[in-house]
Image (cartoon, rainbow, N blue to C red; front, side):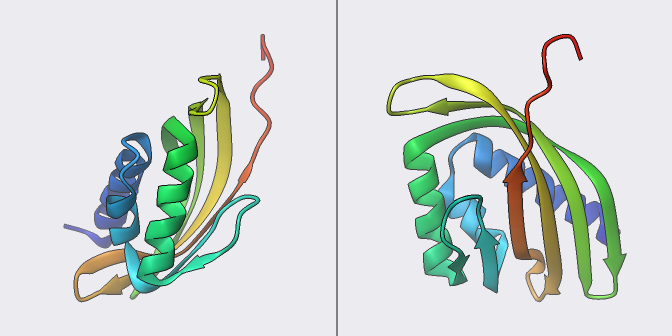
Length: 132
């Protein structure tokens, strides 16, 4: 399998983790020194903080999103991807649903276990307005 295909599969698995609220799966996709920089939340670094960060997120919301890869570059043992995600989010506290759109930056490293997320951050983008 090519490196590009392996990174794409990693992103597919990450989307699955988000959409199934699987904190353990999400955290397992990171390198041992991986860092997650979520929107309006503290940075999580290392396996335990990553797991806790995803648990806290999934306690609050349920995601139903799809990723679009806008740019993917592999260079030796590192890679980066710029992605967009779009779908819906359900807030557990009140059951409300809303559009969810983000842009993301992933940095990957090749490890003995295969490709893993080294750094990941995202921010919100405005949902498309009706009729656009």
